[in-house]
Length: 303
Image 1 (tube, one colour):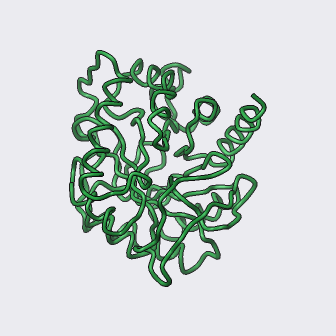
Image 2: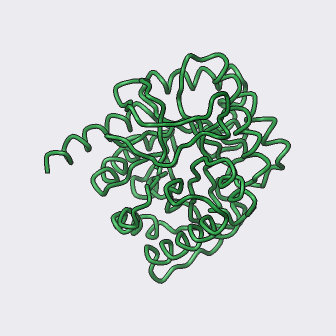
């Protein structure tokens, strides 16, 4: 599980054990995601084409202002990505991703008085390494290590946590014709393959988290079925990250086409995830999901 560094960013913050070698974030000894409350991961897309907020935070000043807002609302992790992975999106070269994300990471570390954790949302080892060098703490790979196996080696060598997500194919075509007979079991099987690859590369078991990949190569009913069976993922013993934020399948349920109108729907899935044992939630709207997670956690503790 991912650790934090004895800090406070808001009402949802936790004191979580962390260990870094002096002066080196690459050598930080984070081996577990462990907290007394669920963690909120705030999305920061420094891209022109992300499905919900593309272009809003591609400027450095706008990105830093958004980080400051998320910190004030109780965020635990800032997830920074320089490539849109929405359905139909094109891939972005490593050099361009680095150009987008590294200045933002450096600015957070240099300008803000915060020890907030930073995850790098990328499938490429070159981008992950540049982000870690700039001050990121965690690798968040939506390909689960399939796109670039060297990212697993990087995680092993640096000791940083890595989040392995389930998907099929590439974002450009992943929604063309996804099909599952038993989506929960098939996703679990695929994640186990990613876990085994990571372990074989030398990543410690305690440094691995998993993500079912809601909205990635999934039909509407697939997403619903996965949410109904989150307990199966939790039962693996690996920390689970859930990313439903503003996703289209909820819009079809709620008869909504604008992603920004799905804040309440997202918060509902966060509360349900907490009750199922999910420990991290990747969201656009920190305040609302922080509240949903905290209330659900309080109820869960009274069981």
